[in-house]
Image (cartoon, rainbow, N blue to C red):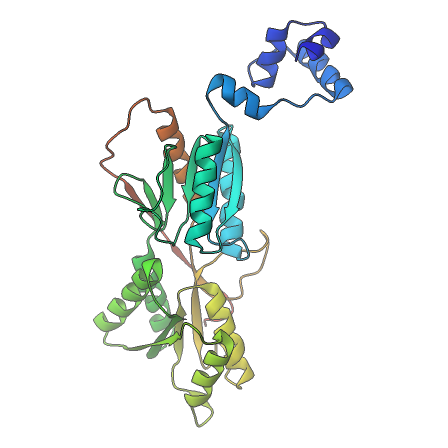
Length: 325
């Protein structure tokens, strides 16, 4: 920093102000930027955090990054953190409690500003963190803010849209075991069907069975006179809904003419992607925004607060794609 100041002809304090995002007049700013390029100066974030006892890093833990929903959420999370002058460290846990614990321990050692976790593993009683934490979808503890979509209403919305489009014999599909948000989605779906006196069943892929072969065997055994027994399908994820749709078509069942399908998440691989699977869309941008707001509030709070509203439930919406009429 001294070298940059000398090259730019300004004080070290002025360079420090520029590096830390404080206001510097335009002419001085240009001098400093020229000196930085000339000297290839890179601020040492670790050293700065040791001196100031503040870090500008936030850890975001997700179960995986190879699905459109987690990919889209990660993008919006990074954008929201950047707006608040934080950098995101993305950690993929692969649904492994051991990996999650390692990431949390790493966060403690690196003294990051905070953590946002979308954890499905039972780690809340296994490891502690001194950094502020916000959870998404699954409650970590009563003292940790929880941001979640309205999964119950999402299940009801799926049933409502299938029924009003003419479906009369509905089916819920998922992988075993149906827990956490998936169980809430199923409950909303079944409750709405029961209220409307609509037949509803479930099919679960067993834990150690191949998803595609299980779907294939189930569909093959439920075809009667070239018609599939069920005319409305709801899945707890878009991925499962998409795979089920593919096997239906493979078996000669027309979607959506004979069978209508709705998934859950409604995320896109790219912004202008045309919606294929009709879905219950989660508000990824809003989830990220509220999560970062709650985390930043906790980071800036001098005392440990007792939150009266630690659970924030966000609205979902139905997106009509090509698998419903």
